Length: 151
Image 1 (cartoon, helix red, strand yellow):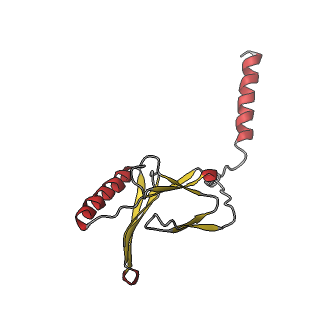
Image 2 (cartoon, one colour):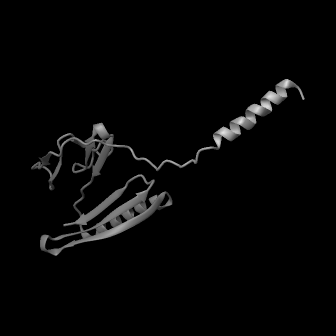
Image 3 (cartoon, rainbow, N blue to C red):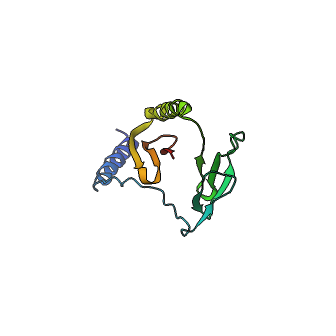
């Protein structure tokens, strides 16, 4: 064997002996840290809208650019977090309600291919005449929460 081969084999053996001396422990899975501004809210209470809500002062309410024909569809945009909450509102009779609920279920369960779980919670407040369903979608889905309510 030549000196170069002996040196190369010695380096490999030495490298294997040194590299295996410590126990390897995998690092825990990490999550991004999101520092939110101090909680402060303002009210969206326009007389031209049939609903109102509170939203953070660091967000803005804009008309939904894809649904300009629907006058009560708005987006709550949080630019710092690159987040958008889509709010849609329809006033309709009972005959259209079942068709729209079916459309909502169809869209919801299209996400089930990527979602790990879909938890359904019913909202029942007869004293306030509010009834609804909250879907909490776990996993890599397009929308983590879907909410339907009837008042």
